Amino acid sequence: MLVRNRTTGSVIRHAKRWQNTWSGFLFVLPTVIVLLVFVAIPMGDSFWMSFRNWNLFGPSHFVGTQNYADLIRDPLFRQSAWNTLYFTGVSVPLTMFMALVVALLLNRPLRFSTVYRTAFFAPVVTSMVAVSLVWSLLFDPTYGILDFLLKAVGLGGVGWLSQPGWAMLGIVLVSAWKGLGWDMLIFLAGLQGIPEPLYEAARIDGANGWHQFWRVTWPLLTPTTFFILVMSIIGSFQVFDQVYVMTGGGPINSTNVIVFYIYQQAFQFFHMGYASAMAWVLFAAIFIITLIQFKVVGRGVNYDVS
Amino acid sequence: MTFLEPTVARRSLIVTTVINAVLVGGAVMTVFPFIWMLSVSLKLPQDVFTYPPHLIPHPFAVGNYAKAWSFVPFLRFYINSFIVAGAVTIGQVITCSLAAYAFARLRFPLREPLFMGMLGTMMIPGQVTMIPTFLIIHWLGWINTYWALIVPGLASAFGTFLLRQFFATLPKELEDAAIIDGCGRLGVLRRIIFPLSLPAIAALSIFTFMGTWNSFLWPLIVENHTTMFTVPLGLTYFQSEYVTEWSLLMAAAAMATVPVLVVFVVFQRQIIRGIALTGLKS
Image: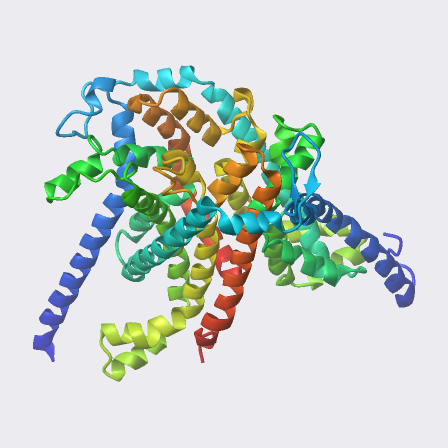
């Protein structure tokens, strides 16, 4: 504003630089402050706390690596870690596979494609708490509609949420049902990025649908698949809502997952240090898995369309 | 050649029919839980577990909704969710576009380290910072207030990154002209960048609103008065109070999901475009 329509270039540049500096600082300030106070500082604080014992009310004591050592020996921690891995190992591939099938079927001109897409995507926008309530009813072992339908085909009598062997599969089903639409949408965006001439060339070379998928679609879709895989694993490691609503971690801790156990330790037993140590183990796991994926899977990922 | 065509046409018709059949089956299975929720929400308590189950309630027990609405302060939960999700969304659009513009266009000391640091915070799961953040909120005396739900959400590394990538694609010449005409940086952002970035802003707003509206673990930790509950918290409260009243519970679940579903169906074109946009960018 100072330089309006008058002075030479150097003055304009000088004034502009001065203005840029101050505007720049002021513009990032709110974001920097909030991220500093609610992410960066808590991050350091949580690390510090993981080496201490504190019950929220009394004084805290430095205990060295005691919390971490206790974690390794804690059978419940081991079980919740295993449950989280099991949940991830089943729900991520299942959801991604179904989403890919739906995306492949939808990736063509169909009269009702918008209707289908809307239907598959609808669960994504709803709250996990609300749909977990609905699924609790569907899963009811004696009166649930799912049991009724399964009995019709000779199965059934499964205590979806009440039998230790089945409860986690119940959690998986809800998560897959809710997550499918999201993966489907990203897959569709990826599929639409594959140039049509590649398929024409493949057809001219006599490739059938199966070959076209494995030689053209699958390799060119790897960046998309990879992206969904990384995001899904990170998301699955943090599963909480459906467990809280549907099983409360039971029966006999068969659905107790890491975040649920952190929640219990921190906000029911007030073992702040122990819970912080657990949170750091979770963070390390997410960090390491992300690194491994970028290193190992990243090598086979095809980013090159040419 | 010509006598082959009917066969090809018939074959493609068969393929299309099979594909449609599979998609209809999948779509019905996906939507079914919502339909069952509505069905049970309109049944009398004694009709919920009839055997064999029936889909159409008889009679329609519309009163379930009034009951569910009055048994817990549902209106209050809705208002709370609106206040919190609305404030976080507006706040985030402002802070993210300011920071994004600075990172995209302005030169200032420490720009690169600040940007890298911000990206670094995206890798940190909320559960790691949850306990100390709870203590900060506690220390500020914000437990059981809106501040606890709003203030930590007033900035977003993801949102800033998303908008920065979008702003960087806009032509610089428009801004230069405005600056020469005496427009300040804030004016440029408000009058030129903002109107050109509406798709990205809309995507960010939808994400933020949806995420805040549906979030559960954080409100569970910092809100323990019924009057401060958001809709998801209110639902679990309802569940704990009326554990066997399935028809009322489903009415409550329907009141929480149906408005969201209606908004989604109405705005689905924009929502889906926004998600594809952000999904690909990140």
